[in-house]
Length: 391
Image (cartoon, rainbow, N blue to C red; front, top):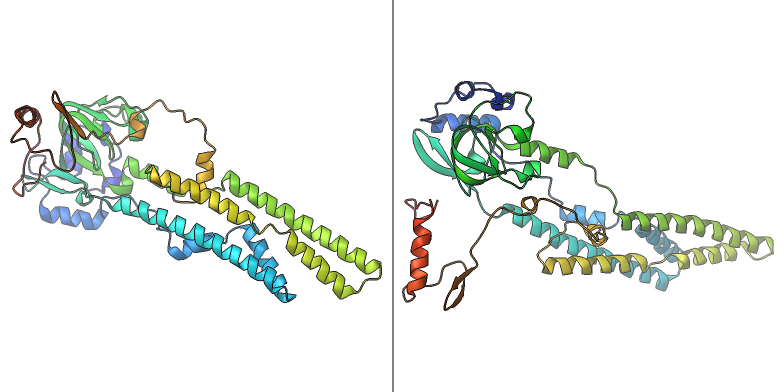
């Protein structure tokens, strides 16, 4: 069998040739042993996550600022000349600023990591001639995957059977309208939106049923290629960071020039040299705005906390300013900004509304609710497995 990564032209191949290249029979699927071998060969079906920011890295980032470096120099100079009160005051400001930024960012980062770990997506596959549900991370090239309305596609598939299938591919193309799918080959140079015989990882099935063979998993999928491009993007400073850095540079030059002028003028007028040097350095320390980083961090932290109360998490504190400076967001794709998932939260009945939590209200004493639930049960294609879990 050729590696799945080279089956990049599966959309241009007939179904039979695709199956032959992947060495799999559609009615049997892979055997458990062969699936295990391929999983060892290709690795798990998941996107590579960016390295988690360690607590030490978050702490180090709090000092990656020219203004903090300037304050640190001012502290050292204050202690060197015996100005203990001024030095300790600046140390307290640096520690408070660092602690506030550190704990705020640490909480946001850990919350985002917890969200990424939530839930395990299950996928229906045919293996050893039987249909089973397995974690999406266990999919391998050559697996036969069964799709139906409401499913999230867990790998790039070459469709081998399809009935009234439509997929929402907004995550890849930005087009929120569902795309009709088929099984016939398309041109080899067809762009991704025109590959109607493919179902791509991360997209959603909005209607119909289908079977497909996995041709790419993990980072080899189209979604994986996008994730790789995102990871390669360089971090850039926010407008606030650039402005503070610019102000810090101006302060450094202004302080150096003024202290040099004052010190030199005093020496030329006959004042003691050591006294003038000490005076010039004291003036330089007093010119450093030790309250600036604290005020900026407090403002950003308050913005992050307010957004967190509205279920919006931001990983880096400085990014709050960038989002806060946004006045208009232009988008023409509703599906791009949603999960393509609908959940019942309220059941509306003639005699009143019923809120729905994790479990539906008891219908034993409510004939209308019982009738509604009966219609819902009969008008869907869900199934209950041996363990009692719905599929």
